[in-house]
Length: 218
Picture 1 (spheres, rainbow, N blue to C red):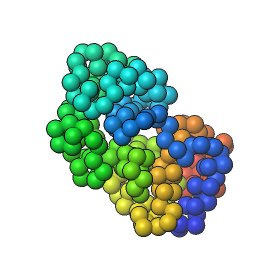
Picture 2 (cartoon, rainbow, N blue to C red):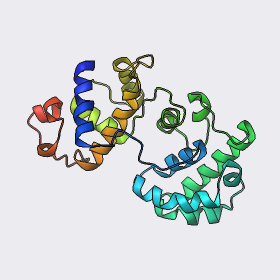
Picture 3 (cartoon, one colour):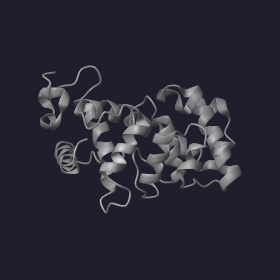
Picture 4 (cartoon, one colour):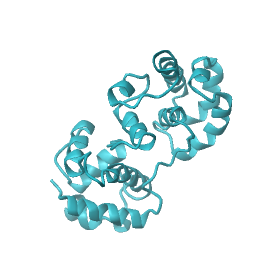
């Protein structure tokens, strides 16, 4: 497995290449808004989500409003984010659960979050890290793909990658926030340079640390 020193170098290089890329690109003003935005971001860009949410959040300002939403109206407002029927159903159900179980508030624990509709481990970790300031390990498709290309470890599933990252950057580490920053940076890198199926290795700021590049792939 890659050492923490080398991982720190990768984080530093990515921060230099993508100023501000170590922060969440979604715009939100509450935990509910973050949760809804993250559900909307599945197979959709943050830019598109951010264009939709101002009107969406003005119409539905809290979990109770989303829970009471007319599903057809909700679908119309989020249509441009793709998969709008599934996302609308998940958002409404999720906010019904928040209203019934937690008085409209978003719970902090990973177990409680992952019991909510449309909320997998990736989304739950993002909410815990961004809103509650907890150590968070967000493994999406970009992180999973680039993790494999870098050759950080032999792990191939999100759960196993998260476990590896917890070893490299333990939750009790004073710099545990680097784990969430790394996830954001790898997502940014995956969209800008290390694109699925056609990575631009010549422009990669971390190619010196990449097993894929070292193997002669471009």
